Length: 266
Ligand code: IPD
Ligand code: CA
Ligand code: CA
Image (cartoon, rainbow, N blue to C red; front, top):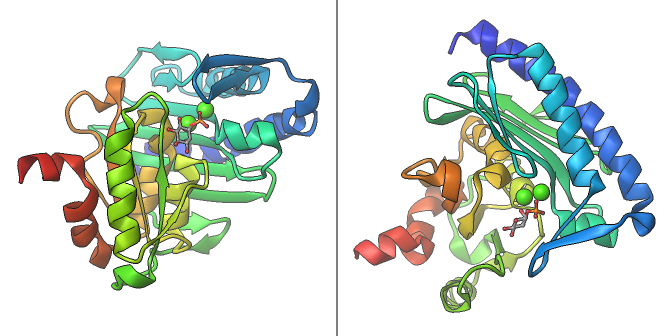
């Protein structure tokens, strides 16, 4: 993808995600009166998710009519080979409870890899962003992963989705805790990746997570010097995958301890 195309999309994406964040924040402030639908066990959706996604889809479609768009709520609009991926609110459970840790997440996948990442938490005003080759930023400040090499001093994000079998998650959590790792379930897979990129967490691991949960974070992580498992392998775009992201020195030990594909192969 040409750098000028990438830059134009990154810049437009920043404006769109800020506008979407303002809309989502307005819903957040009046969340007590929002009708909530239940999609599954611990899986909720409201007008805030749908209207925020609609706004992003409308803006992107107008500016880049040849780009494809995948939204968590509205599914796939297939156009050209470049794919925008939207999670209008990642951290919905936090959003609905008034916990100010959620974000609007938008990423672009081109030629099988994440090339633009935008994560905006309108409550804190924090914007994590990157495009391939341009460095990773929190606001205007460059960010990098922590550089930590000691598992026993590490803090990692983990999350369990209730659609999955429980036993593997319990085993992974136990292995991590026995290794002296501080395990956090912060409730937003997207922000976990942004936090690894900014050195606030040293890694994050999900036994299964969907593309829209991670697409906004992966380019930021890569530009911040982090390592990620091959999330896009196989049918991840439609069915999700497992994901490990980490600061470089912790990637190998965590891969051996946590990554299911590796443990199945061993
Ligand atoms: C969820 C969050 C959560 C993760 C779940 C996701 P949502 O997304 O990213 O951290 O554990 O698997 O579904 O529902 O808040 O958009
Ligand atoms: Ca999500
Ligand atoms: Ca969501």
